[in-house]
Image (cartoon, rainbow, N blue to C red; front, side, top):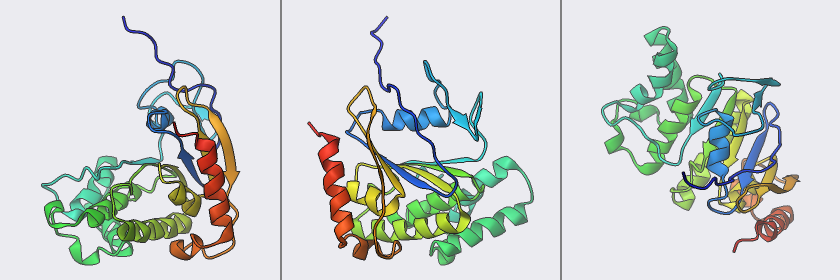
Length: 238
């Protein structure tokens, strides 16, 4: 048998309703493993994961998980991809289509509902993936670097639209990112993680003046630079 590898050690934090929290840490420290533990795709060797104060035995209800890759089904159109999670839950096809159409409209894809993924740009595909994640109306969103492969302009626009939707819906978001600037711009709190075995090094409640919807102007504020410098210093990248 191989040696046991300790990935996560003594981590404890909470996520409030409507709160956006980012996890930043060195590559390979266990961030994705932590998300997989939270939605019970893997089981912890010790400790517990609780939702609404109760420990659950399987995948908790009301959780949406979005990955770096869009993983759209190539044989389904944009709206059919968004409808997928709704169809799994059951219900009226007409209601599913109306819900999917509304989300695509709000994400700027109203004219592309019947397009296949191969005809969409990378940014458009991620918007479809976001709509698919939001369609079943989850209480908690788990994002594993979903914007990291996008160019800067597309990334800023999708981040802005994501923020607006999450705030309007009052959903909670736990975001994994390697981009410290992204974490500071999007989050109410940023949790800094250590090298493996992963532990919490620091936690920052982000409090900046300025319009949180204007992610470019936000980067020019004094508070933004302050948080970015502190978090980079705490990351201890080797």
